[in-house]
View 1: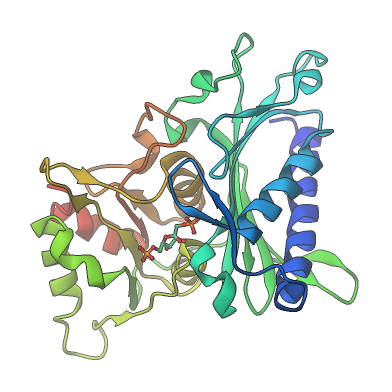
View 2: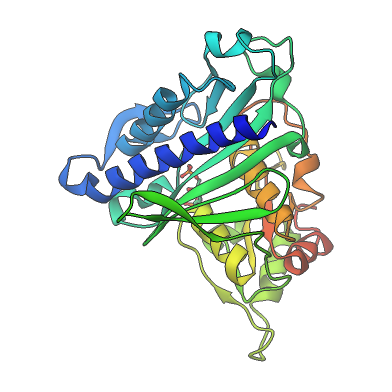
Length: 317
Ligand code: FBP
């Protein structure tokens, strides 16, 4: 991706991050919490902030020339910015988004995030986004904004991972760490263990192993805050594994919850670029080819040693 295009796209994401961070901070006193009364393409009740954050990205990318399509967790079909598409000699791109990750945390002042992935469009492409249905290894950039005690922007464009912290005093993101490396092993595991009986035996045995460690040096602590971005961020800094195993449904199939193209694949690219790994429990998640832009996938992401363990335990059969 030409540096100028990347700078434009990341610049707009940073601006969205500033606006969203400000809105989240005052949502409780500005009537911004609670449900909007609508449901999204996944049949999930939409929070007001889900819709508000989605609108922020739509309005900021309408006039962002390199991006001709925006695909979002909150929209059934891609939003196509016609004029951004065909007015360029250079390639155009699609932005794939989870505008507000961890939305079950909005009303309890928990951590939240925005996850993004940038992919190159085919020269000839329709408006349905089918030309984007390639493996995550085709992403040209990916990352997230974490809305926690601090607001941070983390991204990669295939040459390592950099992290920026938002400084409210100067209203700018300031580079904090360059070329971040994830510890190869970590003391934390994150999962909704309340679902354990719905998982494959392999995933159940993996968590039994992680919780069986007695000695201090190799034992694991559980951390689960309800926001993929925040639990992943802990793995990136301190090491460990985040997993959302597939749940066995009545037809015996294992179904993931998290969306492949705008949740699993972008954090998978960040993990790999930082020396970690990302798997669907069987193999590399960046090799999985989606059939639909809203496909879901089981995910095991984080430190290379723990993610390798998930595959050794045949977490997804
Ligand atoms: P959205 O909030 O974007 O739908 O993301 C899914 C998510 O909230 C993850 O952030 C989180 O890790 C997981 O689902 C929590 O799911 P559960 O409530 O089933 O544990």
